[in-house]
Length: 373
Image 1: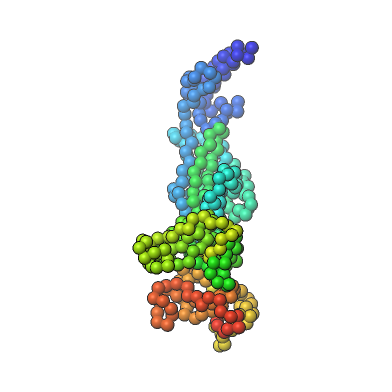
Image 2: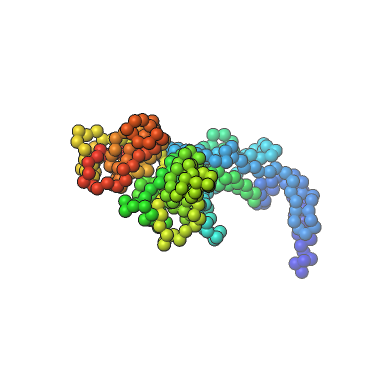
C-alpha cells in the first residue's frame, strides 16, 4: 500500500515546492544550505536534485605558528557562491586533535576522535575543557569565524577543524597550530640510557617540556643539532640527529641525517630523551652573588628573590628564543649545571652556540644559579 502512495506524495511535494518562492521553503523546515531554485530534476525514486547556492569554507593559512603564552588567530572564513542577498543562520564548531595524538601510531580510529573547542550560533557560544574562557571568534567581517586562542599552552598544538553547518550542508577546513620552540637532548642524573618511554616523557614534563615529535627533531637537525646518543620521541620511536658523520654514530660512511632505531619496547628498553620546549612568559636570569653556592643554598637564594630555580627547558628557550648569553655556570632545578652561549668566544666552550653542560656534579660543589621569575 505504501508503494502506491509514494508517487502521489512525491508529486504533491514536487508541486508544493514549485509554487513556493525559494526563500519560503524554510518555513516547512527545509534548510540544507541550498536555495531551491531548480526543483524539476530528480531520479524518479523520490530523491530530488537541487541546483543553487553553495557553501564554501576556507582558511588563508593551512598552518600557524606562535609562541607560548601569547595569543594566536587560526583563520577560517565562509562564503556562498553566488553571494546571498540576505544572511543565513549558520552554526560554527571548532574541534581539535592534539599533536600528541597525531604522533601516536595506533590503529583504532576512535583514538583519533577530535575534542570540541568551541561551538557558536549567532551571538551564543560555548567553549570546552582547557579552552574554556581562552577562546573566542574574531568576527572581523561577514563570514569570519577565525578562532582566537589566548594564553597559549604547551599542549595546545595540533590540528584544528573549523566546521560551518548550514542546515544539511556541512563544510570544514583544518589549520595546524605549532609553537616556536627548541629541541634539546636530556639524560638522567644517573647517566645515559636510563629512561624507558614513560620515564622519558615524565623527565621532559619535569623540565617544562614534552617529548619532541619527529618533525621537531628533524627541524632541529636541519638547524644544526648533532647528538650521538639515541633518545625517545613522542611516537615511541628512538632516534638521534647527526650533522657530522663519524665512527660510533652510525658510521663514517653514512650520510648525515636523523638515525632511526624505529619503535622500541616502551617499558623494557631504555634510552635518553629528546624534549621540546616553547617560549615562556617569564624570564630566566643569573643571580648575581659574591659567593658561589651549593645546590641547597642555590634553591634558597632563588626563593629569597621571589623566584624559583630555572628548569632546563626554560634555560633552553631563553637561549634559543630570547638570545640569552652568559658565560657563567649555574645550578638548575634538576641538579645539573649549565650556561647559555649565543656568541661563542674564548673560554666559553666550543666554537658553536649552545647550552653548555657540566652534567650533574655533586650537590655540595659551588656554582652560581639560574632563577626563573
